Amino acid sequence: MTRPPSHRRAPARFRGAAGNAVVEAAILAPLLVLFLAGLLTGARLQRAAAAVSQAAADAARQASIARTPTQARTAATTSALTTLRDKGLHCTPQVHLDLAGFNQPVGQPGAVSARVTCTVRLADIAAPGIPGSRTVTKTHRSPLDRFRGRD
Image (cartoon, rainbow, N blue to C red; front, side, top):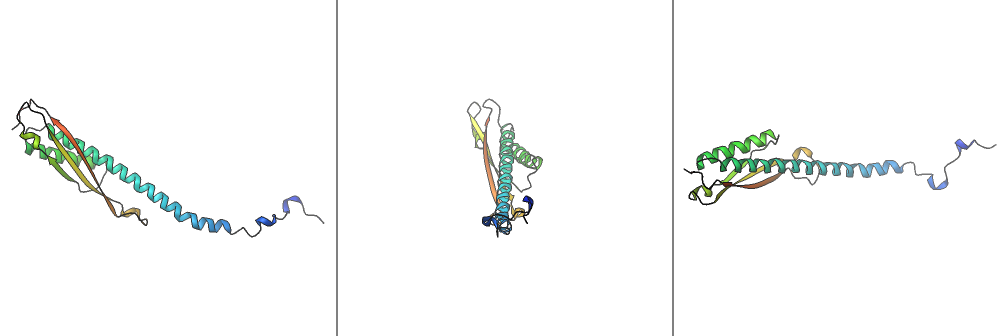
């Protein structure tokens, strides 16, 4: 008696391969998880770098429009902290300013620069080989108006 075509036996080359899919999944699943963790880490660092860069640019601009170095320091620090908070980056930043441009006499070109450093937490990603944190530093310069009075 012949079997209907739907009940034909698998060719010999496919017999015994039923467990291969489980083994392949067991090997590939951790690699996929590591790949996704790497993507998440890269995206978080890219977002942090953009936020820190914007904070440095804002701090330099605020320092450049201030009248005195003291006002520049206060305005730049406040601006950097506000920008990082608005961008949703949770870190304790360090703002370093170069205010030497304020020492230039009126009529001479001068500039100020702001360097913002922020440590980004990565520990919550929890994948092997990914560090617990990464430090991101960005610097921006902004020119001082050469004909504006400086105190």
